[in-house]
Image (cartoon, rainbow, N blue to C red; front, side, top):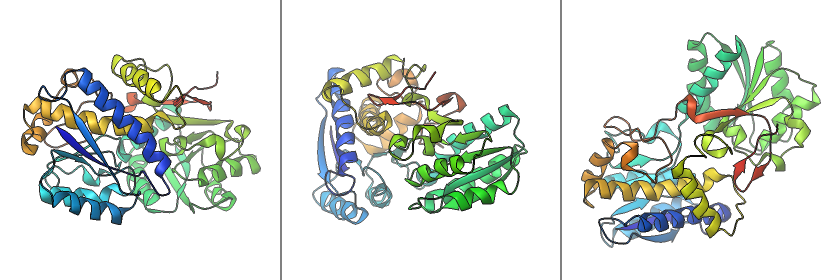
Amino acid sequence: MKIQALVALSGPIAVVGAAMQQGMDVAVQLVNESGGVLGKPLEIAYIDNGGSADQSAAKLQELLSGGKPHAVIPGSASEIPAGIPILAQAGIFTSQHFTSATFNDPKKYPLSFGNAHTIPDYVGSLVDEAKKQGYKSIGVLDIDDASGEAFEAVAKPAFGEAGISVTFAQVPPESIDATPQLQQVLSGNPQALVFAGYSPAAGAMAKARTKLGVKLPTLGAQTFSANNLADLAAESDYAGITFQQLATSVKGTPQTDSAAFKKFYDALLAKAGGKLPFPINTYLVAYHDVVLAASAANLAKSLDAEKMAKALEGAKAADMPLYVNPVTFSADNHFPTFGPEDFVFTTYGPVDKGLSVPST
């Protein structure tokens, strides 16, 4: 089996692409140490797309003109959606980590599988935590872009169904001062706050909370927590904020203590010389992209894309021992399902070798 992986090895997110390449290299290593695919070594070819949707589309068309690949990983980040429809039309098995549930549509994309949590997953965890704390009203700051719109579309009804009233204010992604937006949601006298969004504006949210002397309980959604927070604001600005994180990103959880995670993590540390400049999820999603495709072929005993997809739809965790994420695929669901138990709420703490270490 040979996987074709589009990855940003040049351009503005090349450092992210390089980290993801390390994750994919580790996956190839561990798959081959476990017997390879269909008894032969797994191979991977990297195609630089510069992190660009246009480049991705062009590179895919060039790739497909030369024949039908066994499986394709369509990108590193925001360029991924450009590739999925092209690959679907060509009938190519696709393994990817874009978080939008838009592509979790087995009828429209029967050969595409995701390896990331989706917005409903982490929103469900946020709602459960808010209910646990007894909050009846919440003010939310999120990002004024497509990701913020997608978050609000899920969060508003989810909080409403839980009997929690919610007010939103959007912070421009380039903002360095979120004070006006925070004042806007505070005017409704909420019992608690939620900060959400993967953007440098996350620092502006935390700074505004300090500036206004806000003492309300504050939850940082997973997207907020995933930022490189130490570069965006002072540690004191995060005092009093509880951070929602994927359990696979936090040291000492059942997920990071699992055999599958330890095998991945030890191999990654060895490959990277003990230095991981990015949070672990950057490496892990790319690792999963490769492991999923290899597992599908082994389970199907075939490189036929339809047989691979069918095999995954009936897979159990024991069938995919290298896969760290929940194995919950079905004919109606081509993404792993992350429940509340797959998220943890922590205090602010440093990131050490890719893992968050909450302060005690």
